[in-house]
Amino acid sequence: MNICVFCSAQELPENYTKPALKAIVEIAHNGHTLIWGGTDTGLMRDVASAAQEAGAQIVGVSVEFLKHKARANANEMIIANDLADRKSVMIERSDAFLVLVGGIGTLDEVTEIIERKKHGAHSKPIVFLNTDNFYKGLQNQLQRMEADGFLTSELAELVAFTDTPEEAVRLLEDRS
Image (tube, rainbow, N blue to C red):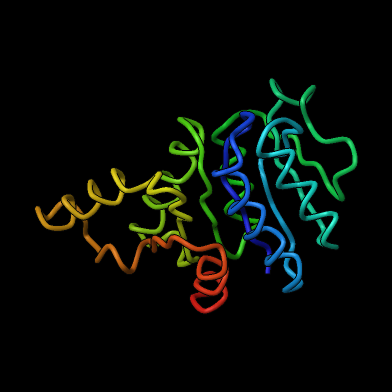
């Protein structure tokens, strides 16, 4: 499978990086290809390095204004014109999506992927690795949206949340 990973390009403490990298190594050991934002800084760099070290192919999808930060030794590097094109390429190239800790960019990417899934544009699994309850607030908000009738699909059909790297990868594999 081609598994797209959304995550931060910031340097993060070990309580966030360790579970993320454990999931990436699991992805690599299971023979999957990593698709990621292409940046060679912070957690994005660490994710790409862990995948390569564990034997996975890595495909970066960067954007024109960030190409100076793109990883030089990716198996493939795609430079999209803008963020909208980047998300489209990631959707086209991926069979599943894993959401690791991240900021506004990560939220932008994953909310569009969820919205497209809600409208039937794809049926690919989306799994959040909820390290240290990082996504608990988002999970609560999505549950509220579902309860109050703002979602046209059941939340469980759109996304899954899990606390462990092993369960995250299992869910990606089982749902694709």
